Length: 94
Image (cartoon, rainbow, N blue to C red; front, side):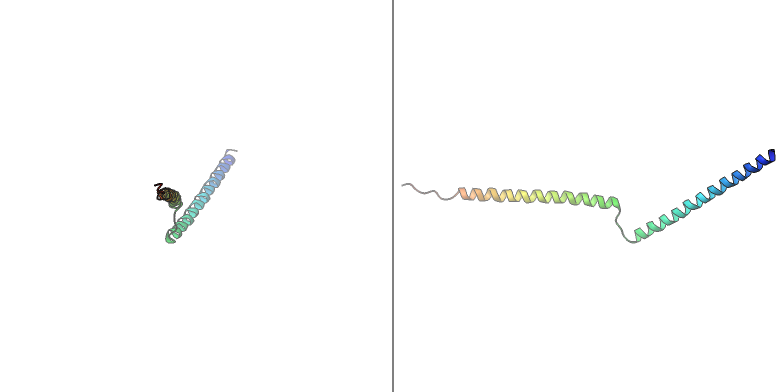
């Protein structure tokens, strides 16, 4: 009876070892595929997501600054033209 349980225990350990081996092989294959993909991306000169987000944020900031400057210039032109209209020569009442 003891030899049967020992036999089943050995078979169970072998199955566990085989499953572990298969899992290790799967992880190795996945790592190989990921490294190949990464090399292809690096070779393609693609932009990383972090760099893209940083540039997008900078672009949005610059667009807001340009809009502010355009509004400031337009406001200045409006004030200048209004001041120019007020400086018209006065009629003499003599």
